[in-house]
Image (cartoon, rainbow, N blue to C red):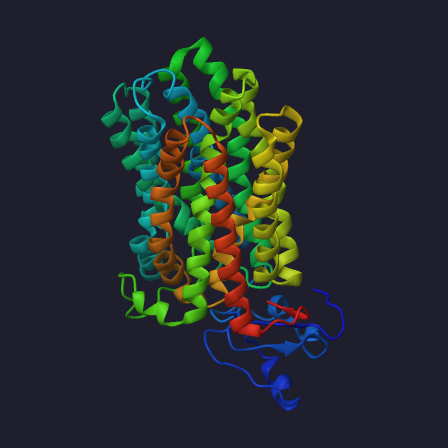
Length: 462
């Protein structure tokens, strides 16, 4: 890992602490391998020590940063997230279809609650799942999530009424997604610290792959074999994926002795972590609005139904690169630094490109690709940034406790957008402005957290 001279970064606690101490530096002790929230050191003095993370003998205090076992966990997480996040990134296609078929008599705001509740449960349930992962490991969580996710998708195939979709897609699908998503992300943190951003981003690209495949596949299947069988086909694909996830997702660190399985909201006494959580709240508040309404937006402005459904696949194609590349560079230039940059770009794209586009096809396509790329880090970088503020064996607890709060934005964002759409008589400008203001709020909070931690200097890798 190379950095320019004069830069600073936060490094994991290793045997290099002795060298740093002898140079007059200070170190903060904790679980070895964690990115200490108190430790900022000169890169020139410590870069030569970084390789010792992978060269040293593997113990509970060191990270493999690679190898068959570590990469098999990434592969298992990729497959699990391909099912869980693939469903999440297909909700725009499902919403557009249901609003013109089974639920044509319901308002956009009412239908939005089906998807808002699904997203809410996908993150809110992590409040309990994260601590259970820390205490017991991923095996039974992934298995339970697989049953819920497959059951929800197959149940959705039989759904015809509003409450049917609430029970199957929202409740079963949301809980299943959370049971897979939280341990799939957390398990990667057991094997990587220096390259955690790129490793997590690589696994998270699966959500984009699913968001490309299923929005292209489902409309064709809807017109040929009908909604029920199209949904069953998707469920069978998910079944294969979650079987692989159950086989390969493992934890490395032993359960923490005496670890509680309950979330701990005292964590928010740490003002930096609290600001980061509020920032992610705003980011997630805005993120799922384009994912849910871009296809409906295109249909509203007269773009063909076929291409309107395909726009979601275009967005996810951009997101594929946006989930991995920012993670790769974040490991070298700072996780918070890259998150700030991508959130700023989301804010600009929303207000400068999407707002004045008014259904213009080239502008809408440009927004879909670029927003997909810049928003990809909203999923892949936020857990890594949170992990940078805690010990690794507490990663699940911190991440899940934060997303207990963040999930409230996921619950309300899509319905609020639908209500704004109804209040404006179908005009999308209020919805787009709300999305932009969400990203502005997130940007302010993440910048404030970084400044409180390391100051305004751009030479600090954080």
